[in-house]
Image (tube, rainbow, N blue to C red):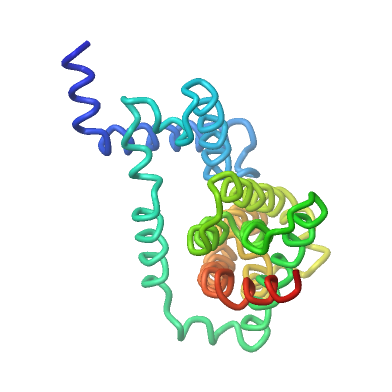
Length: 252
């Protein structure tokens, strides 16, 4: 047991990758076998992560979820700001500005409209639940934009871990709803061509939700929706801790 503990603690980051990899494998298996692809595996994985963090915190009495277990200490590093920011930057470098022009003016407008409308809805929900601090309202509103924009905004503004967790949960709920409802409403909104897929991706923004929803509608539309959804995430990360926060602070 001493040898096992030494190996796990000294190689904590490798253990974290292994645990997350196993969680993803199980999540995608559940998504494929039980939901037939209607709920994306990433959404199930995030849900499992939140549940594990909750029970980990309750069991250990700590504030870092499963990272409070000695064997899983590497999860704290892997899930920290360094890896998150690296993933965001890597995604941004994979986007070509010229590709966005193919969506036309409607695609550009949809991205900004999607970010602003989602933020307003999230901020109003936060107000309805009694939150009055501008940082908390902005973080939860950013979480409604996507579950990436929420933590980025919260970290930049110094929000508490509880508020950041709420922002992730808000983004997760949105992602799941987009996954499930996209194939249902596709024929009613004319979601059957690349241009409409780009606009849809710009309005919804959650990349995993849009990709899964379009895959269930028409797999050929996935790249177009995912492209504008990626820009949506980048715009949200820029606007959340800056302009949108200043507006919330001025209003509240």
